[in-house]
Image 1 (cartoon, one colour):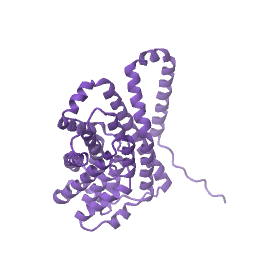
Image 2 (spheres, one colour):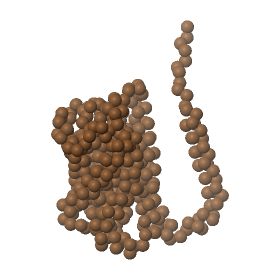
Image 3 (cartoon, one colour):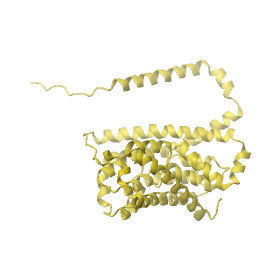
Length: 338
């Protein structure tokens, strides 16, 4: 008697329709661009557009290898590194667990989007909340991929690497210890403390899906950041940037808000900051420290993972601590607001 054929899981119809529509739109856009090639070339062949395109391509090409490497490592961690491993090495006291979890972020790299579900899994498996939050802030900010990318983006200012590491590490530890002191269990949704079920998905499938999701998600934000950098380069008058450069406090505030709004991936934000060469190092350091800690997409992800009551308290706290730590690290490492 022959065995029945293996069952296959049908692909959801909505996903198939979405992919078909995307393919049709892409083909249509290519056909239109081909038909209008002459007018488009004449329209775009101007100095301002060429400059913007050069900045855009340069930022993307420089950042893409680090972005891909970071997402591959993130996928490998999601597939083969269990949060239970981190839980076993953490001290029982939350105040002592915070620095250990923060240090784990150095060797367990991942983008901001990946660190949120990992922190949620840690909390569900009994890791102290403050330690999970310290890991959430440290992993995307002080891992080797981000630090190497920062060194490549700032070849003339190697001190930026140390300043970013110091500011981001201080942010993770500061927020973690503040949460130990002032955090409340009821601010985190009760569903977070339920361990997620094991659905039996193969490890390679988890790796592939996590890496695919992260590279698509982070790549989209990289494109938006590169586009913003190119627009700022050609649209904002140099006199404005020169005026902002002479007002360090205002420049730091503007760059902090810009980091929240742009919501760049931490593996690519250094190249965007490096392209704003008219600004001093200190405001650009604030941009690099604040971005991986709090931005609009992170607030949404944290609200979905931990609840709205958590997000409305955690985001302002993280923003204030990140700006403070970035300025302090910059003054210490740079020797002044340069």
